[in-house]
Length: 365
Image (cartoon, rainbow, N blue to C red; front, side):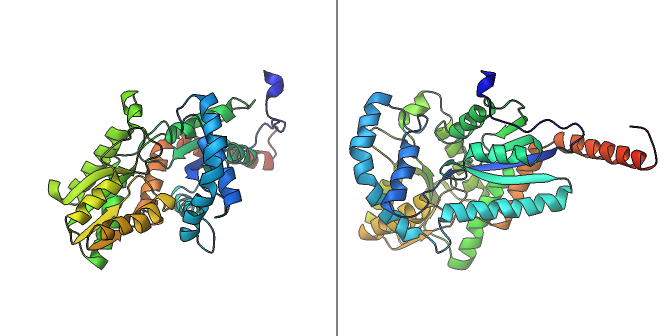
């Protein structure tokens, strides 16, 4: 119903429109304490695309069990990786946004608004879309920072965006980037990040390529996530010239008791430890910014599992974060998807400037 539309300023003819780019990641709690984690987990685990379970039954499980137990335990984990400036995920996402904005400004030379948002927590997708509209963005590109598409990640991004658009009277032009799992520049950035690490610390006996897991049933229901992870892993191994026995693709972060995508990272790491492997390195290509799943689950817990099982050296290779090749890749992906918009923007600006010059010379309106 139109009466339920969000309020908007009066439309002004002749205003210069801008192009907006919204980078979206998962989200993070505001602080590493039980109170903040309860708020975060409640929102996160209430998302139907993240938890595919009968709503009425899940409500009792979530409020009766999980939200009474998990917040304190999760807070302890976050406390181990929290930085003085705040959440690692938020810090890296902010820096990525700032750096790619500076790069695009230098390369394009047109008014461009680059912001970031989170699926869970702040700043939200809804408030950032409104903020970008308020800045004059009539064309907005939404780029999900999840390289591999899953209904529970990029799917959440797209649903949130379209839900917000449905509330607007004057809907901006929208383009979306749902995945880039096999983009040559993304693969090249991953490979260079790993080569940089190996240049400093040497190479392992085996590289573990770990992706966030999802329930196995999602693959059977049509989710392409598993296949996209496999493709990313294969392309990365090829870029690094690894043989089949020098790497393994696996899946982490299993939640609950149902069958998830396998093999499970924790089990692979334990088995390699039991085999007394001298050194393994773990990289997580699905996370473009370091977060709890990389810094605590892999770098801390994974190391404990491997060494505790009898393994030698354990190395976690940091996420892309602000690696120069990754910032360039983001810029390239964005420019590809802005094709046509940039040219249109330049023409509109030239027309506006031409009209202003004519008026200044005495032309009639």
